[in-house]
Structures are given as structure tokens and as C-alpha cells.
Length: 225
Image (cartoon, rainbow, N blue to C red; front, side, top):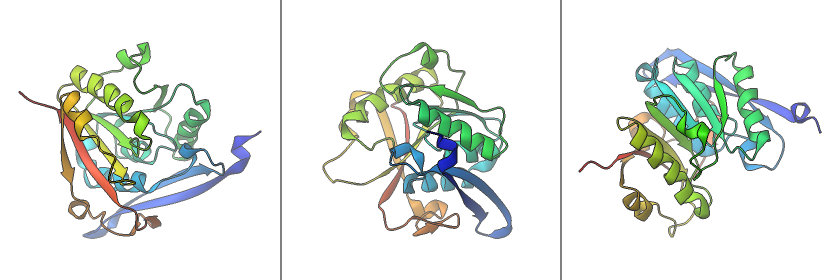
């Protein structure tokens, strides 16, 4: 089946709230298929909005997106001048193809796409360059994956002690929490309130996302002694 024949382009336009003259549009080809990673989820728009408000800091930084799927946050970071590596599970080649498709749609030819499976300390993971920022949009989706995600993040933060993990997740159950896992892997986190980066709205970037979903934004770092 030709996956390319089943895509629909979706444009997200990020604007400076105080100066409408400054804006950036990102085109994301969504695949009309029920697989999770094939279209933009609410968390991705919120994380991309955060990146947009930090765009001056991203220039020339090295950024890795985990579980990138259609890669809205990573693509936006690249458009803002970051050196970006997009990754998704090595076991899902269609998701990796999504990453490449999103890069092509935005004229990005120097973004690496890498197969990284959460929880596995693979050669690809150990050979990554020095990182400044790690991104994860809705990577805390299935509770059985939570620890694998944090194993990967903890490994990367120990290798890059000054790096930060910027992540958004959608609250789907009050019973789901990463607090104990953060403690186990000696990680600390700070909540970033959505209103501090103009993301507390049902519509962002010219789209109807995040809608009324409850999305949280966290910055995770190594716990200091």
C-alpha cells in the first residue's frame, strides 16, 4: 500500500502574541491511518508552542525528539535554527517514514532520522552527539511504556548532564503518575504552566488543538545532590 497516497497536509501557524508580524508556519503531512503516530495530537501543538516561545534559545542547539511520529515539535525546532535529530521506534518503520515526510514537507534536508526503541541502550543511542534538549510529546501514553521512556531519558541526561527533557502529556487518568519513576531514576521535574507560554487556549497555531484536553508541560532534569 502506498502510504504517500493517503496523506493530508495540515498547516500550523505560530505567531508572536505581541507582534503579529512575526510568525512561522509548519506543514505536517498526516497519514489517514489509525496508527497512533500518524497525525498531530494535542500535546504536540502545546510542546511546539513552548518551543516557539523559546525559539531564540534553540538556535544552534542540538535537539533530539523521542517518539517523534509526524514530528511537529522537532520540525519547528529545526525551522527555528536548531540541529535536530528525529527518532521513533526502530520497530516501526512507518513512523520513521513519517519523520522523513514531515522534513521533506518543510524543506529540511539536514535533519537526521533515527530508530530508537525506548528502554534499549542501543549503539544508536550511545553514539548520539552531545545534546542540549530532548523533546517528548505524549510519550507517556501507555503506562507500560513509562519506565522505558524514563530509562532512555535518564541515560541521555547522565551522558548530557546540562541537558533538559521538555515533555507534554495528556492527563488521561488520575491513577497514572511518573512521580515514583522519576524518583527511582534520580530525575526531578518542574511543571510549566500553560498560561506562561500562551498555550492555555482551546485553539493553538490556527488549529482546533489542544481543544479541551488536559495537557501538562514538564521540564525534567538530573536530580542534583
